[in-house]
View 1 (tube, rainbow, N blue to C red):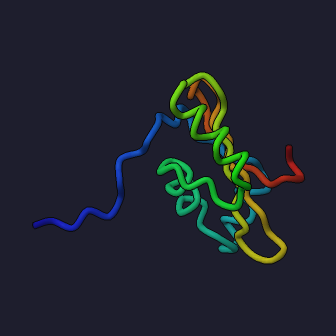
View 2: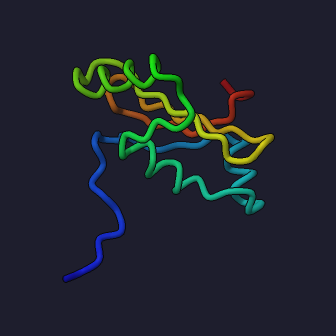
Amino acid sequence: MPLVLFAQPRFPTGVVVMTPGVEYLALQGRFNPAIYLRRHLSGDWGDLDEGDRQLNDAALESGQDRLFSSYKVAPELKLWIITEWDRSVTTLLLPSEY
């Protein structure tokens, strides 16, 4: 039996883009953004409180609101991922770039 490493995404990403800050840190080897993108696409919303998780779950069900994840990559580094309400674009960004 083959080993499956990646689950099917729970929603379409649209075009995946990253801000200059995320790209810079990724190129420096500070973190691998693909790991966090896979978590986002699987419905693992990261470090959100229960209310925000419920909002994402409702948006996933309705398909009519944006999806937001937040991940603590390192003590001083947080990554946000936002998929637009129409699932046309998924953006990886630093909170300072919002």
